[in-house]
Amino acid sequence: MKIKGKEYRTIWFDNNVVKIIDQTKLPHQFIIKDLKTVEDSINAIKTMEVRGAPLIGATAAYGLVLSIIEKNDLSFLKKSSEDLISSRPTAINLKWAVDRMMKKLSGVNEKDILKIALDEAKAIVEEDISFCKNIGLNGLKIIEEIYNKKKNTVNILTHCNAGWLATIDWGTATSPIYHAHQKGIKIHVWVDETRPRNQGANLTSYELNEEGIPNTVITDNAGGILMQRGQVDICIVGTDRTLSNGDVCNKIGTYLKALSAKDNNIPFYVALPSSTIDWSIKDHKQIPIEERNSEELSHVVGIDENNEIKKVRIYPQKSKSLNLAFDVTPAKLVTGLITEKGVCKASENGLKGLFK
Ligand code: MRU
Image (cartoon, rainbow, N blue to C red):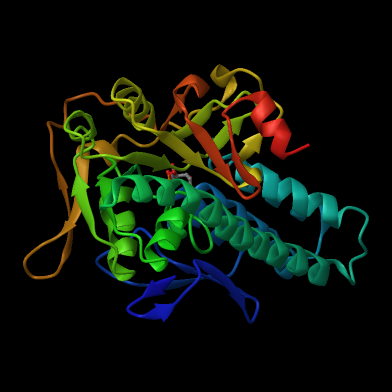
C-alpha cells in the first residue's frame, strides 16, 4: 500500500540485508531500518519495530536467512529458531513461519541452504500477500451487502492495527476496507485508539489516511455508545491466534468490543490468513498471553510543538500496573471468520469446511 503516494511493503530483502519500516517511529517519522543479523530480527520483534501476527512471522523467516548468512552452522540455526520463536509468545504465525522454514531446511547441505532459505522466506511473504488480498475480496462481499441495503456510508469499527503494516501488504481486517474503497463503496472507519501502544491511532489511522479513507480515532471505551447509537454497521478485527473451535485471540480490548456488538446486534467479523490458525490447542486457557512492560502503560510517547518526540509519565510512579497484551473472544460472539478461502462460521465445522 502507499505512503506519501509511493507503494511499499513492510519488509523486503536487499543485498543480504532485511529492510523494515520502523513502526515504533510511526506516524511521526518514516524510517527504514536495516536488519543485518538474526539478533537484529529478534530485537525488532521484541521491541515491536515490526509487529502484527503475519509480519512477525515473515521477520522470523528472514531472521533465519540472516542467521545462515552470519554463520552457516546447524546448531546456530537451531538456536536462532528457538530464540525467534520465544521473542513474542502469543501470535502463532511466528512459530508457524519458523517451523515451516526449519522443515524446508532439514537435511539440506551447506552449499544450498542459503538459497533454499531465502526462496522459502520469499514464498512466505508472497503467500501472505495473496492470502490478504483474497481476505479482502471475500470480506468485500459482506461490506457490499450492507452498502446495498443501507445505500449510505458503511461505518466499520476496527481495533488495534490489523492493517497492511501488520502484514506485508493489504492487511487482514483492512483488506476488505481497501477493496471496498477501491470499488467506490462509501465507507468510514472508527479506529479504536488501542491503548497502551496506540496501534489504532498511530498506525491504522495513519495507513487509512495515506490511502484517503475517511476515519475517526476514538477512545477504546467509545465503541459501546457508538454501537448503541446505530453509528457502527459492522466490526472487523484481526487475530493473533484462532483456535480450531473458532475462539479468537487478539489485541486486548477486542473481547469487550465483541460483547458490545452482540448486545447491539452488530455483525462482528474476524479476518485471518490460515497461518493464524492453531489446530493444536483446544482450550483458550492454554494460549500464552503476552504480558508486556508496565512502562507501556505508565508512559505515553508523542510529538511536541517543536516536532520533538517525547515520552512522558502519566500516573504516579508508585502505582502498580498490569499490561496484558491480548484477550480471547469466544466463538459464540463472532459472526464469521473471513479467510483467504472464504467466509465461515467461527466453529470447528466452519474452519474444517474451508481447510480440510
Ligand atoms: O501487539 P501487536 O501490535 O503485534 O498486535 C497486533 C494485533 O493484535 C493484530 O490485530 C493481529 O496481529 C492481527 S494482524 C493482521
